[in-house]
Image 1 (tube, rainbow over the protein chains, first blue to last red):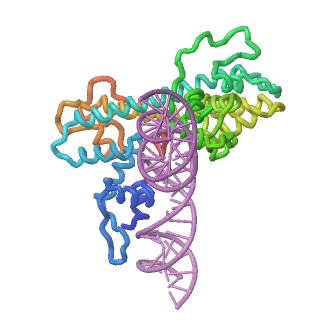
Image 2 (image 1 turned 90 degrees about the vertical axis):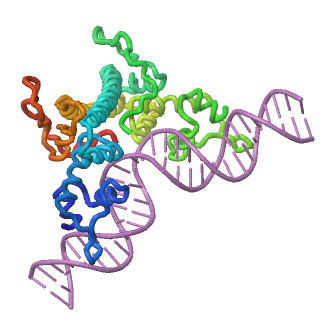
Image 3 (image 1 turned 180 degrees about the horizontal axis):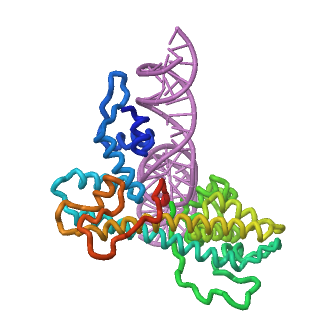
Length: 157
Length: 157
DNA sequence: GTGAACCTTCCCATCATAGTAAGGTCAACA
DNA sequence: TGTTGACCTTACTATGATGGGAAGGTTCAC
């Protein structure tokens, strides 16, 4: 099986298969006389595992560990569970930070009239770092206080 | 004002200030005879703007646009609002995808006994791509159906 | 035998940020 | 005056996962 066929069958691009081989995430593929890589069922199985793990957001380094546990008949499911739980926590953290950003920015955008004039609480907030100044304070729905002190969060990198 | 002082005052690292200059996000700084960069209040103001925008997760390219609007006295707050709303949507999308991953993995982890044996629904799911197989189905709390068809989501890049 | 579709390796780009190395400058203090 | 330590300069490298492309070899069907 060619690398292209393996890519279509596994859902991992040929580019990435070569990359995974180069970093040792998959073993060096068999080669035909022509130099073409040759893949079998076991290789597809491994690539599928990697792809599913990527779909769950695992980093390649964590996947390396998971692959080790996968191929270890004496593994402890407690180890696997610990890795999964740690990853869930990281995913939740990142999601929470993104949501905090979205909430802050949504508040600012809600306070902006968007009527074509230059005055804009979004720009004003970026300028000063202050929260939604509500340049035309609406009767209700003005956020009273800030919950998250917005430090140096950097999330979606 | 040195670049180090400007960095401390603005919350943008000296490294990043130089980088922002190199990509034209901030104008070339004044230079002293020694070649040292020299910063004033206006520079700090601009760096602060950039930092606040980064804190809200804006990309540098979007910040470039925002800076243009900021310095444009004839800007329309509708333009700013549109950029903000688009960004809110992106943040929400990314957060949602992360949460979907977290939910899927949490379900798998919940189904794992973690009792030290090798049997593990997490590993099994990665292997087959199927959902939590619940190798020891608990009486209740087994997810009945999947809502998100888990395609090629790639989020936290 | 020819052309299209594939494969190979190698290099470069992304995005925002940090690290390091080699060398120049500044300020304080002996 | 000399020294020291903190700072600055440029330039190169790395990160993580992925994509794009060039230049050249292989395979297969017509």
